[in-house]
Image (tube, rainbow, N blue to C red):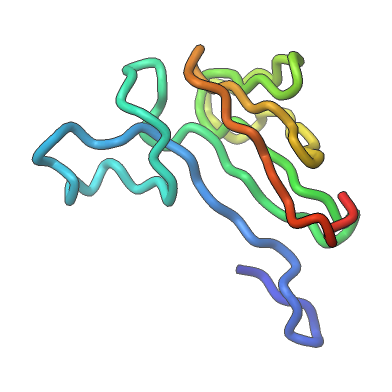
Length: 113
């Protein structure tokens, strides 16, 4: 987590990815913070969901070669996983990864995003 000069978070990040197979929960290759399923279309490290304090918004970005869909718009990944286009998230944005069950991005009502 990056912090500014006052100690406030500048960037908070969570990685979404494929769940390890049954019995391999401690497998080192499955390092995602939040497991979203076991489909092979889901990469072990598929997407990064993060807060950007510069523009005070949450984003999600593919960190693999596969795309992320947000509110019906496809945001492609990249072969190296570093140049995927970030998708801005709003309250109740619908996130779809690997044709899976949709994930809805929720914030407390007091957040103005």
